[in-house]
Image (cartoon, rainbow, N blue to C red; front, side, top):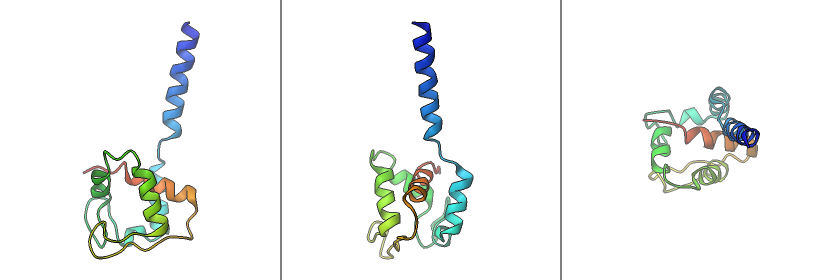
Length: 107
């Protein structure tokens, strides 16, 4: 029984680590893909601050999936009149990393 408990605890910890976002890699992706031209961590530039996005979608269980869609295909009308351009050249893994990272932003 003790072995099962330890094994289960280890798996839970490992799965949490697997879902952790590599912040340095995400920041590098944001820099390399022009995200920081329109967004910043805490202040609105052209688009909303990442902390505002995280706050808006905090209770949305589909937040990451919705952000993935907005990053890949662009969006308009969610944050005002200026649309977010699509990023079709980014690969799915990088887009998901960015979306997960955005959801970790804090005020």
